[in-house]
Image: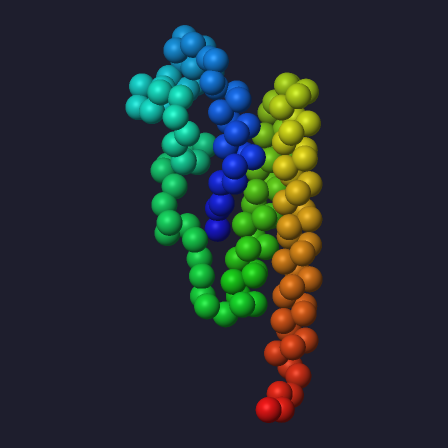
Length: 126
């Protein structure tokens, strides 16, 4: 599951809002600029557009939480890889914050899974 949150979009906007077409091209974003100007266009690093098919939902709370945990861990890894290739201190500070936030989200989802497992195994008396 991929959710683009306002903070992430705002960071992308800040990086490109004042860029000239030449700077966009030099940054490897020439194709993006030609197709979308500086508009935010949901795609992965290879240029594959985002689709709702990426969202997985089974309808079982435990299974769905495991999907959420996987998404948080994938986001955490992506932030780390971005940090690894960036030499921009200010950008990396923001990426570190976002990376750590993914860790906290993953931990909370894991806690929720354990609570649901405990409740699932309790005998219900009505």
